[in-house]
Structure formats: structure tokens, C-alpha cells
Amino acid sequence: MILRKNFKNLKIFLGSVCLFFSPLLVHAVYFKQTASSSIWDFFIETSGTPIVLFFVLPLVLLVIFFDEGSFFITNYLQYLSARFSSLTEIISSWMIDEFFLCLWLILCLFLGSITTALSENYKVTFMVKHPFAIQSNLFSVFLHFWLLYIFAISICLALNCFLIISRKKHVSFILGVFLSLVIISSYKIRLGIFQSFPTIMGSELFFPNYLSAFMPAILPYCSLIWAAIEYFTLRITFRRIIQ
Image 1 (cartoon, rainbow, N blue to C red):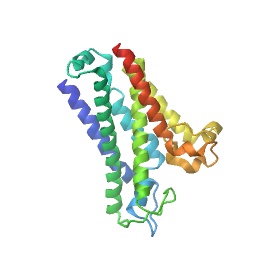
Image 2: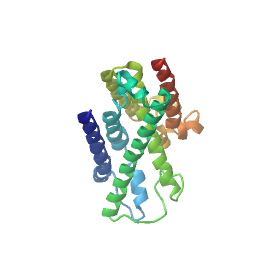
Image 3: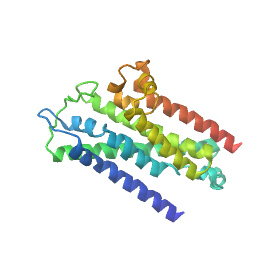
Image 4: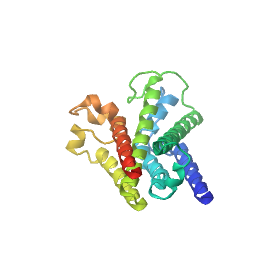
């Protein structure tokens, strides 16, 4: 158990480092500084590029979370049941821990963006002029952070669903890789159904691609809807496990 905990902490540490330094890589490849660019423009730009959203972030989440709930498919679940008044409290406590871990990972991405922007002498101002920004103030920064956070939660809950439903770690890992490929395809291949019905988590981070969507009103809540569906799927599946 000690070795397993140390390995988990190592994964979290390495994932945090990857997310912290990913804006530096994105800056070298994608971002071009303008006279009006601020540190907030830099954050929205670097954390919203395909290399971060479709490669770095999903890979970090996949490595950390694909076996996060593996105790549900072992006898360790019965050991935990002796420490809680009900098994429902176990899954609630487990999800809270995962939500905080997702928050930490997105915070690492944010801090990496701001640190890189400051080191590159971007402007420190309350104004936001990035074309993807909803408003020209710091609300756009908070909104973008929130969308990244919900996107991360939706992926992590999907991986948990794969694990508990399949009850096999290697199957959940393969399905997690497949999910990442589907998310990439929804953006890169640009199939007609994805353009008219942006139903894949993370679509709200690329809303300019879906201006012709059939139901644009649900686009800002795409990952949130997925997270809610996955949460209730976990609750239902968990009840079947403990019965």
C-alpha cells in the first residue's frame, strides 16, 4: 500500500509539472505577442490550444485517474465500509477528493500560464482582448478557468465510469484512450454531426467552430451536462455493486 501511494503521488507530481510547463511549450509554437497582449490573453490562448486540450491534459488525466477507483473492484471496498456509516459516503468522499485534484491540476495550468507570461513581459492589466474572451474583463478569465475545470471533471468521471462498469483496469485504460481520440476527432475531422450537434465534452472551449450548431444554447454547458450524466451513472452503478 505504501508503494502504491508513493506511485500515485509521483503521478500527480509529474502531471502537475507537465501542466505547469505546457504553456511554455505552447508559447514557443503557437502564441504571437501583440502590443495589447496581457497575461490573461496569454492564459486563454495557451490553455485553449489543441496541444493542451487534446494531448497534455487528457494524457495527464488518463494516467492519474484510470485506476483511481480500483478499490471498488477489489476486497478493499469491504474494508472501507467498516470506516463509513454507509457505502454511499465512500463514493461521495472519493468524488470530492477527485474534484479537488482536478482543481489542483487546472490551477497548475493557470499558474504555468501566468508565470510564463510574466517572464515574457506580457502586460499586467485588468483588460482582456483575446478573441475567445466573452467579455473584456477578468470575468472571461474566471469563465475560461471554470470551463477547463468542468472539462477535466467530465473526463475523470468518464474514466471512473469505464473502470466501474468494465471492472477491469486495462479495459478502462483502452476506453480512456478511445475517448481522447473521439474528443480529438470532434475538433479535427469536423464531421457534420459534430458541427451541428456539438455533443462531445470540451466543445464549449471551441465555440467559434460551432456557430452553425443546431442548439447553440446548450453549447456552454456541454461538459457540465456530460459530468452530470456520468455522475448519476456512477451512483446507479455503485448501488448495483454494493447490493
